[in-house]
Image (cartoon, rainbow, N blue to C red; front, top):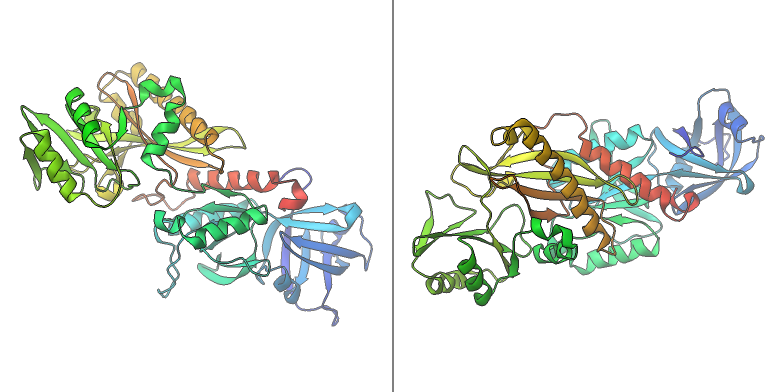
Length: 460
């Protein structure tokens, strides 16, 4: 919190002396805020508020005792909570926050509620938010009614359902592109906008959209494989120029339904990302036969065709580098983590969901380049990722706070931007139980948004 905020502990309690609108503050807070017995205070948690009389109790800690009935009016659970508090003396008002919410799909059919691929990540967000005196909860798409949302907060080793305060900021982790186009999603976004609530990573990005936006920045051109919307004409032109191409769904993810086309003599060797070379590599004698077959198998969606690059490998397995970029403040991007992703045997995509594995990035570079060259490439990757993230962020009206940027390295040490993902995976195998840097980055940026949103009084 900023200097004008205090870290305070809220304790639930029973009603004092049959006075339902009465709270007690520690003498430490009483003296800091220069209060007197029976003063009237206005308590505000985002859009919920209540007026109360105050009394004091002896303590050197920053504590407030609030009866359960008043916590309910503020939509806070009846539990001990550490939050930030700002006191505006002229208005006799206390603002509490920040309240941070993650929006996603929720499986409520199990004995224990589950948040799909971000379930473990939500627990890490909760842990780190608590350390920073923020209140974190998870919600699904719904109408915002009576200044509250239905969501799940974590306590005593489980997630609890409750009516909770409208948040100061929302992090979008909806998994489905179709759901993001639904009327419910649009309505939810509109309600957040109406309440002036920041909403970051507001949508999925298509591969063609990403390519066009990166092409706006001329200095990035040399890092971008040639990419076009798939048509027969574009495919014919590109297969004439390059001996390796990839066809990818415009709105694809997780390495699914990608087609690799490789020239072998006068034939085209074709493989799908969801099969191995040993299982299914098909050969076509010319462009006409391949394109006729491919269009007959097409799912009803758009595709791009992209220049293939011969990237470095490990044990003949293709690899790339995933750089997670996150906003540090309103304008500055940083690289939070870098991993090398190694494809499964006989596969050409490195996605973890397709059997890929995580390896140490610098160690991989050292198997191909001498130390100083590897160090130069490693440093250049980070610079390139930050530049790309900044370009993407500046091209969007909506707020973007996190991007997964996939970079390949060719045999000469050249860098190539393969893809950019606005919903980078949070489900990595064998990650330790401590809080990942990416979780810390999300909460830190959410706090920045909350405290920058129209002044402290409006955001917390």
